[in-house]
Length: 394
Image 1 (spheres, rainbow, N blue to C red):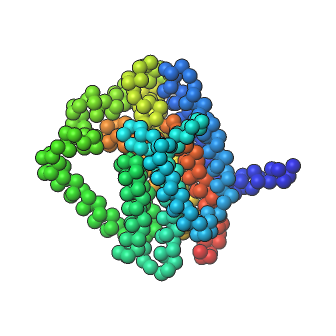
Image 2: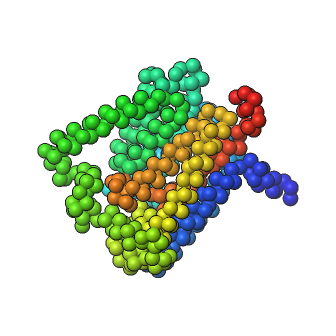
């Protein structure tokens, strides 16, 4: 009996129970919103899939806590990179499925859920980038030098090119870019790099937007440009490209401070899917706004922010730079997805297909999130006691 329960006892002793508890609280909030958002279907399929995914995610979280990923990645980095490339290339096979204009999904016969490779590949990307940064620093190079930034930048650009070329998912490219920026900054890359690159991109955007694109056919034909045009002019194509965000903003506004009440939202409970599109996935924040009001939205955001802050806390107390960078990468991943999804629902960011972490419906994405947090738990399990750090051991 002692042997049977010893792994669990070890996890309870070393694993990050606070982080797991926060994840479960956020997931429970999400299940409640998904139940409300899908009641019009008169079945509980999405709720059942979400609960099963959470349970599997918790198991993956616990398993990841036991793994020392630093030596694993150092020995197997070629396999991890190869897995990432092949997994994305599977989207070009007959198993690849296009939804919402992006070829993001794998559908295997007999398998109950769709799999999103670019969601899963975020984890090996963060692990490999953390190892690359650590190796550069171990060789005595300044991570802020042109040579060092070029190396980690090339790695990131390669992944962006794969995702853009295979999936056409610009939203996911934004996620990978922010992950890179957060990890690079936490490793010591100077702010001036981000100012220079960000400034150049901003200037290029202004020039293209005001002086080049309006004179091209793409201005009226390219869907991506339309997604940005509607941000600056909400009256532009409200029944087309702006429809989803118009409906989401209307739902959030109608909830006011305290909402209309759980299971009482007019748009959320409508039997017509288009009354509030994608209400269990991309626009679940609008469900929260309509039924639970601003108070409910603030509680939701407080839960997600707590998870982010816990990741940052673990990064600051990690015994290894590798684990610090991994934890910061996970924090960056959550930050960009939260900001992009909420901004999309509030009609200040374009629709990018990014769901709300731990809240939105999703099978493989939920398991991936718990795996990501399991890596953070693994970092916490290997952190040195504070009294050793204070004595200058590190």
